[in-house]
Image (cartoon, rainbow, N blue to C red; front, side, top):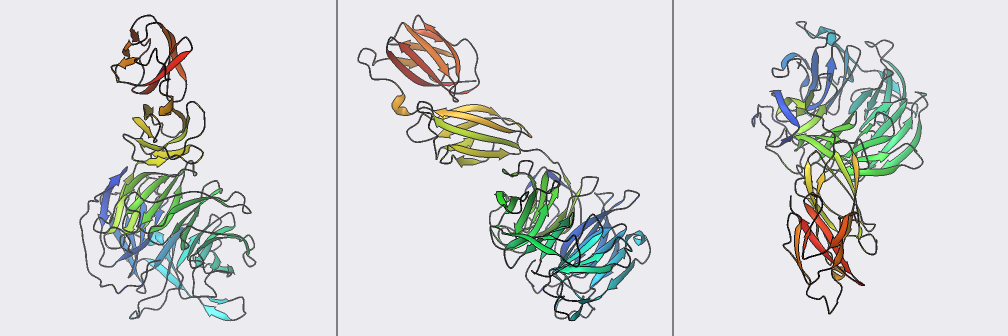
Length: 532
């Protein structure tokens, strides 16, 4: 969206290198005299890749086949506006713009159509359309502006937030004659700020109502609302459906908002699955999210581009980011506007309002996920509010009332998990993160009240050294059986202690274990730390 601001058109450059990045690198960049807005991509039949970039002054077509050296090919002047949106069908680009600056003198384009086969010509081939459309009340109106548009797999263009009617969705057939689209119907129950369509279903963003709206558009001139659902920050800017049409992702264009996932497989029972923010700042405003296979690529104004692994949408995990706007941070409508991730080369092109066009090279990694179950080793009762942390992975969480916690990381490494809860022996053990997996780890914590059983005859039992490498010196008991138990309550080995030295039969990973000694009717449990 972005509020209207008085903008002076001059070159501002803060440098090409971003301050923060993870699994994304910069390949090339080009700047503009004007601020940028939205972006899309186009690949020719010969495999050449182009960024279609909106600016306040018009549309820039940039070849990024050589990503290190982006080449500006064409520029189509248009009305001066903060907002432009661009999509493609066949070898044509379709462009809308929203409200113009007060001093603008160029007529509204309505719908701009560009023949991308003319990209190498001296002058590009393009035209504008301002069709007259009948609104539901019966009056006629002329298309002048639209905030956004989307073209589905069937060749229908949906213009969102137009000046006609309530600004829902104006529907045009672009497949039959791409150069001369035909108006075929509308949805006008809500103003849609943005939206996307698949299989005749519109997933619309009713920004001012704070809801996403699901619409049946199988009959273009008789659309029907199927469902509505609120979003966390009640300013629904963007929606995008997963490839299997079961999970919807939304963004709210407001500070401290989220990328949110919903199960929409049953429209009568839509449920939120998870939500996530960028690690570069919780106050940042998210803007546009696009599904790319199991990943979601999202633009955040002052924090650049984020890649989230949504393979398991109930636990979204950030696996990549690149800050295109290192001079800005926090809340504010500055920085990255949009990111297009659909080139066959795998490149991402993104538009930064002040910094210009960036060509990025992402590495899409699968997240490692872990479901932790924490319980009392004696009573087996779940333990809540347990602090769970790792030495290498950044997340720190607390277990729920059911003793459960989910954690995820971009790492695929050997790590160490630490659990702490007042009144219980701290737990430390090694853990191997597994890329692409959603693992389960059960951890039993020993209540300090169960460490040792009062016994007059054996009150002086001592075990040392602790920690060690698997050999213990004991005093106070000379004939006992032992059991070694891990943090999940599993017995690893047992035996008989015949003298005052106990050497474990096997080598075990670094971590916290429990050595239980029993003699006659008496028993005592020692938490022990085994060194690597």
